[in-house]
Length: 132
Image (cartoon, rainbow, N blue to C red):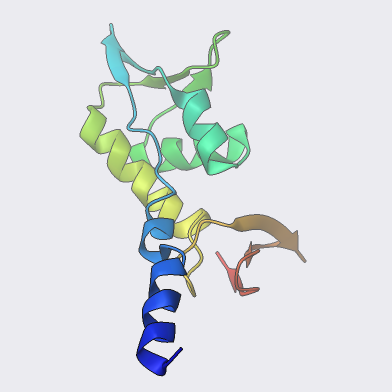
């Protein structure tokens, strides 16, 4: 087998690395207005996908939106005030950029750790550690 045949075979058998990047997608927030409250219906599904603590994500959303929030008995986030889906989605994107995606390799395979009262993002994929 010559070089060209080996190269063709290797390219055919290589994994689809480009597809790996899109494997991490946060579900679009499903929100609805209920009086002066915005109910984030699929908050639990978002938490499951992010792999982060409920309190951490909720506190970030509250700070970014400048509002109060709580979790109801069905696991939905109830945000005081009216916020549309795009605004909540923008806040989630900011959260992912700051607390989920590795700043070195961009993969979501990270864990939040606290060392000496400093939150750090540790990437399981590339081993990078960065303060957040």
